[in-house]
Amino acid sequence: MPTDTPTVIVSGAGPTGLALASELSGAGVRCRVVEKRPRPSPWSRAFGLMPRTMELLDMRGQMEPYLEAGLPCSRPPLGDLRGHLDYHRLDTPFPYILIIPQSRTEELLEKAAVEEGAEIERGAEVTGVHQDPGSVRVEITGADGTTRTETADFLVGCDGVRSTVRQSVGIPFPGRDYHQSLMIVDAPLGRPPEPEVYARITRRGMVAAYPFGDGTFRLIILDRQKMNVPVEQPLTLDEASESVRGILGIDLEPYDPLWLSRFRSAQRHAPRYRQGRVLLAGDAAHTHIPSGGQGLQVGVQDAMNLGWKLVAELSGRAPDWLLDSYERERLPIAEATLRKTDMNFRFETSDSAPSRLARWLVMKGGRIGPLQTPVLKEFANFTLRYPPPPHTGPGGRAGGRVGKGPNSLVGTRIPDATLHGGGDRSRRLFELFRDRRFVLLDQTPGGRAAAAAGQGWGDRVRVTRAHAQGRTGLPEVLLARPDGYVAWAAGADGADGVRTALAHWCGAPQP
Image (cartoon, rainbow, N blue to C red):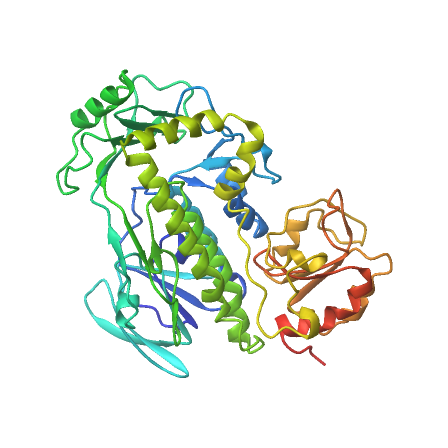
């Protein structure tokens, strides 16, 4: 039984909970993850990382083991055996989808969290929540069946669609279930497709194949003749093989399956992500159809958004609006994801004449390179934009007014860049985020912003005087949040406003 009381308790050791634990522990916050599964699941709902998720992991110096374990796919098929999306059209160090089983992703996230100091307690679950203005009391039932109560500053529910944490604080989870079921098969193939990352759409349905690099493939089968089969009915290898043959006209010959499953999706969304000292993230806050591979991405990005804000709140230096900005920023992202995945699922499953025509047009139009770029940016999570914070100073200076000029970047993703000058040992912009502080990049000739910032925020802000090579779109002065989004920006003539921006985002300076 654990002996030290954590500052933050995280319920759930899926990708969201583990990513959050790493963020908190890496910033010095005592964190315990409580997971009811006695051991990690060998099954993988998700099987890939998108470019922005990889960029965030890279900002923490964690990407190398993922690259060793995964398979980059820069040209995923459109489904007609001729067209592909080309991820090389994106400006990123990771112009591809990284195919990697969720089980392996969770293993690497857990390793990083434990190395940062987080504690993972398996075979235990949150069974009750009580809170007052200053703390939250969490009832935890352990593997031996005994129940204890721990008091923490915050509890974060990352415990999935049936979240006990969410139910304990009375947050509803409205939405609906879909009646259609799809099939998943993880198995080696006697006749692997060519290329190995494969997708084909026909009148009867769709088959997609993704190699895991160990001889095993993930097959996703959408068979319109069997979509009404109840998910409770066991899936057999013979049935899955017949569907593959019927859809493709060829036999991929799956054998010795590791996992056979039907799955049915739901679209549900909590109307709020915070109730006092209890917060929700990942599938506990929102769940949607896996079309586009966005579920794991949205959850990890929830964690990256929430982590630094909890750290600031616990340090006593957070602005009074900061922690509530987690919901303000992330809830619209989940709403948009639910809308898009719902439309995509209807598009994929409908057999109406207009839908068939639309699929044909999409596959044809998808071969046109310039038309791919906005689609790729959407899949990669590069189009995300957070609103400017409330209570900005005159003219929107503190938070950065959205409009023309440098502050039009506020809330957008920071791209990576090679740095020159300034004497900083880091040679890439993303490396500046490794210690989870704000980053102030000063590209002015005389370092006016760095000088104006002084030494009052050194524990919260990393100040770098350097030039970002080839990034003509970056303003001369840029303040970036610990999660890699623009907090404030200015030209050289506005560099003196940096102290106002720092106070607005990071609290008062130290004497």
